[in-house]
Image (cartoon, rainbow, N blue to C red; front, side, top):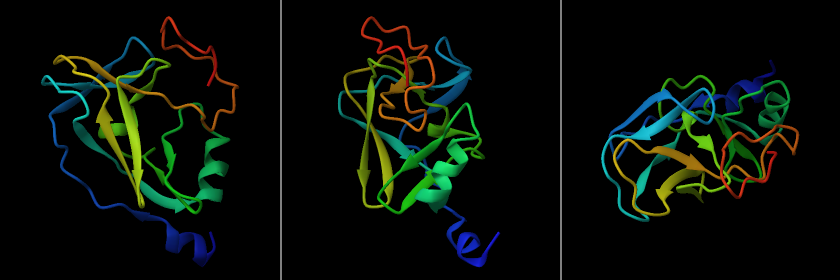
Length: 148
């Protein structure tokens, strides 16, 4: 690893989640992120956190993984949540999502699209993704595009 790469590999500052969430088995894929309380429409629900890496490094890592937890926040910086143990690393894709992600500076924040009941799995539309149309979608939505 060269010094330039090591310099960019810093953990982002941890954040308290604005809402109680839990990670548990998902009907979509593996584990998912679920709200523990009812949520209102357009409510901020948290921030994606992870290792701060270059765009180039993020794309290199994405090529070797089935489950990708990398968000590109600008033309230079990506956040890799692969080693995170909680939070938005576990949000699953859906072609009919109930949340959306907003990039603000070097941060990726999540908001609800509509009111959600307690116990609802949080989903986001990951299209386009690092999978480049090579991974079959398992969201089960009536509007499913078939691949990520």
